[in-house]
Length: 492
Image (tube, rainbow, N blue to C red; front, side):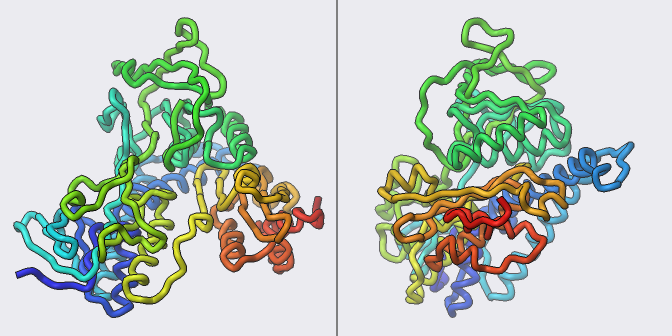
């Protein structure tokens, strides 16, 4: 006989376990179905957490080696132990895994290990090592997330053709690497490898790196990367079928991409601005490295769900169609996270899931607003944004006013030895309402939240400027950039 629940969540990533906990708080009897033996999904185990742990090691190494003497710290003989960095990464992941397990027990959420699929909209079959069982639920939340995507000819082998999952599970790193794609995944790992001492080449199909960001942010990041010795080939296509594995690594042919559309998922596209030159013939060239990292995006994980069986048709890109509350076309079936598209980011996934379970419970939540999703990239320097760029706002019919303020005019940025970068504010000239912010520089992934909150409460740049920011702090740049919109910035 089937066990009965108020809610069954399929998947235990941020789009799964966060809403499961919220549902339990709202009095629901909840089960989480997870096909892996561990909880936390991609973010905790393969994505956000382990990658940022490695990036922290990379950042500390760079600061000590390149800027230590500036602060009176003599750095002769500094060495890097990747195995120790990897151990730290694993310890962080392990501690958080235990934390999620504890939260499941605390909130009396039943965790069922196995692969879940629909029998009917309110019936889930779970196949696991101990056999098969059936669950009944008033509501089901699909939160199965996404997986790394490759290209034909670039199948992952974990040694010479790498995915982001391979990077975080490896006990070593290549001395040289070609990175295909310059979205968040591509530039984060390019930045990390460069700080570790690897020779890095980024191949991007579009005419700029981080192509979904503000163009000036792209330009600033490219300049910073090139100053660090990272080679960047924008407007360039790699030919997957030309991949050759050698004793020393890989070879791959690249060529000019021509005109391309700036579209694609969070992972970015691949290809480049100046065609490469070297041993190729004509417009074609051959790149060589110890490994190639394929960072061309992710794909949704829906193949085991039997969605056809309950009448849910996928979008052309493989995502599940939902409304602003996460409802699918089938009553009682919701979806959240990467499987529904939008911004493929853990914090967006979590918020979508919370909205979904609150809607199930009749709590009348605010609908999902994609313009309030902060987009954060943890390369060095960091990149963060939300909302519209000036060009996007003008395309939507706004009369725009825009200003930016440099970190080099902020005392705390000079104190910390990170004076490069800026914060840009985009506002509606008619209503003064905030439309977006775009930033590159120290700790902007933390600072951007102030702007997101201001937009949530329909704030204006003037109100951000009126907010008293502590001195000296990096947060002062938020007030200065906001005041600059009307020409009232103090330190410029």
